[in-house]
Image (cartoon, rainbow, N blue to C red; front, side, top):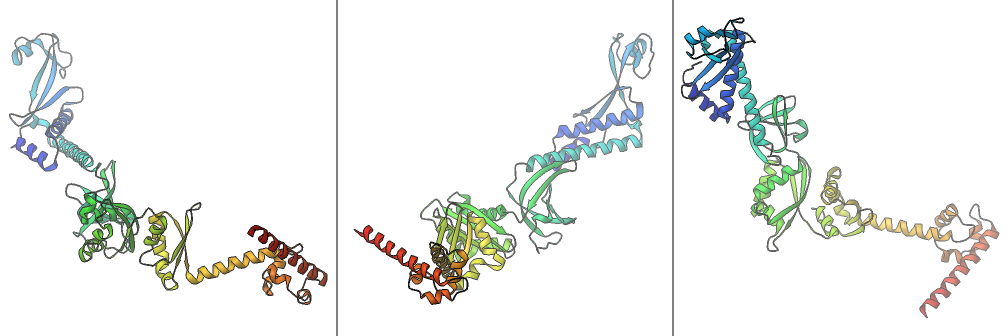
Amino acid sequence: MLLPELKRLIEQMGKDKGINKDIITGALEAAMLTAANKKLGQNVDIEAHYNDETGEIEVFQFKTVVDKVVDHETQISKEEAREKLDEGAEPGDSLGMKIETSSFGRIAVQMAKQIIIQRVKDAECDNIYEEYKDRKGELVNGFVQRFEGGNIIVNLGRAEGVVPPTEQIHRETYKRGERIRSYIIDVKKNSKGPQIIMSRTHPAFLKALFEVEVPEISEGLIDIVNVAREPGKRGKIAVRSKDKDIDPVGACVGMRGSRVQSVVQELRGEKIDIIPFSEDAAKYVSSSLSPAKVSRVFIDDDNRTMTVIVPDDQLSLAIGKNGQNVRLAVKLTGWNIDMKSETMAVAKQEEQEGQEKQSELTKITGIGPSMAEKLFSKGIKSIAMLAVAEPEILSSIPGISETAAQQWIETAGQILIEEAVNNKQNDL
């Protein structure tokens, strides 16, 4: 099969598609074998070879030399072989006869064409997969090509990427042909070819954007410790410096906020808080609640919980809209955070002190938790107060007899005397 400028076309196709020349010529050879078998049948012995010098796909039918021909498709007589092919042919030799491919017919040629297209497509898919399989975690730029079932199909040049609905920022809209930057989270290989899955919601997308905008990060002078995001709304990023002379937060913000604003613009207005990482957990958690100011922190290491106290006017800021700020701080630091205002903290402390004093009354025989609560509500909030109470006042409370009241008052007095003696001995 001699095609006009076939050699040039093969080389051009290899260059344009990035496909090895051997794959293309192999596809051509396979296609011509298929066309030959369609024309001559499946029982014949056929080979096809690409001749690089002539730019021709040569097809040969091989027959075995015999004394007496039984099957004309696979055998040739010794006399005919010596006359047409090889003067020295002997029975048992296998001789190839060149076949004119122009005789294969239109249907066979169409079938061959389909094989070539499929082989080249498969090779192109393999090349794309090999190119992208190790590029997970990279930022890529592309153009919106089309929309399919909620997916954004992105033209990456030689390849197509897909941004599924779950990886799209809510309320972000794109038009066909518009530039889009995404983060490769996976590369899969399936029957339809490689699938490059990309995201704009992944926390690592925010991290990758800062790596591009802040040279100190790409140079290894600043580390991004952790990232927490609610895509399209707010993100927090914790950073630390390996060089004491470099302010990690200032470097990420940039001159007049230029660096962080570039990231905000790419994320179409998502607010970004840049937090200085600290080995001091209380300091780290306090910083993570930015822009709120923290008064004090109580740490429960066993449950990895922090109770954070803020001024009354800072509580709503610390919690954030629908709890967003504190929720992101939890994700960023890994600590459970219990937020309280100063007023709430005082009220909680008074409640706990009241419960402790109320519990103190139960030391006296006959006073259970419910009776202690009843006495507490009548203003008798400690053993000392019970010791000086009037029996008539106690007995006026439903459920307390005069005898019980007198016994409780005496017992309370004895407890106070014992405590005073113990304290005096401890002072000696």
